[in-house]
Length: 566
Image (tube, rainbow, N blue to C red):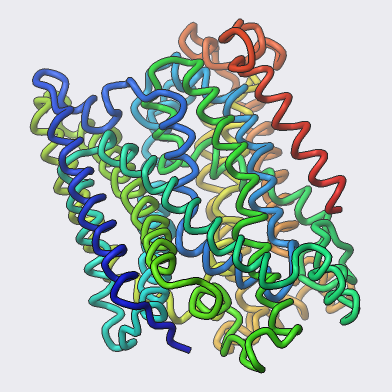
């Protein structure tokens, strides 16, 4: 299925591209200051305010993978995968209350830098390398391919030219990222969030109207015996393949890694003007993260409902991943299709620019400065620009291989589930337990990574399209006796596996730390909560802008939504 947009839509899309690239370049040049070039380039001079932080967090998170995959999951499974959006609110509360204060107070440039202050240089080096690899191959590589795939559908670009589409998107995004650094990234991300939300709201509005509203959706699903698609927490026997206990156990592990310890996301918080701006910005992002359930997942379900209602004259998406572009073609008026196309590009460019800037920051501060500690500020910025360009080239080269995966979103989520556990365990213990030692940290990070890779390979071996790894799957079952316990262990759901890996990593950390205790220096003690309630001792701003009020309100809204949609 190839959706074509009209000249008016194309004009809107081109105007957006020219405008956003020009804005990013202009802002970057305008805010460059002599004498503080590296701080200005990598951390926006430490003067980001809460609205920009919140919008940038959301924009970096939502990529074309989310737009396409969440609509696809809505089409197939209803609201179920909206859990990945709503649960983010809980982990953003953790970022705001417990992690952001230490990040801002320690004035670190990167999260590996934070690990060195809390643990050791070895932990810093390990996290820096893993963060760079994950940013290039997960954040950038997956996003570029899905963006090119969407442009293929919207503009009718032949699939033979997908690689050139990837190059074009990467080139435009890399241009203002190289020139402007973080201030250009977050400024464009703020605009891109508005464009993204506007386009998504347009699709949701027209889909809601065309499907007959909530009553029409309920009536159609009830007639087909599929009311379960309107629920978010399901039993293992219900369709969707995501049981409620998998969400409750597994999401905190990957959520804490993603929202609280991943440089690509948290770099916006590191550039905050103050602790209160960091906290309120994170909570603002938590409120915005409620929206994707209703403007990204629900439209996919509404597309399914409209197909069942015969709204498209017997037509339906050729593939479930075409649900979003199918709706754009059939229900969006000319002119607004260009807005939605711009929103799709905004989702891709914001994620790519954020990841590119984080890679440059990680390499420059955590690796290069170690080799050349006396490097002048301006030279460090030059290194960052070169690394940005090199990262873009590597990501563009890798991106076409993403097409080999049967489910892009599923593969990305699965990879994260096996990367996250050791990092989540190390940060949680480091912030909440004064006994966590540097040896416990590095053993957990390296050992947990090896365990995660092994578990990931085992999970792949059980998939039907992984014929080469199938003997490994069958051999493990035979080695473990082939009983029900063996099947549970080998075929464990990836979300549940992430939880148990995190528990194992935490146990390793605790055992090694107890066996190798070390004195807690004054600097390290300042990065550990003596009591979790100490996180609430800061008075914050007065009135509704107080972080405690905002956090309580966000938690209350999330509980209400889950109560209504459980």
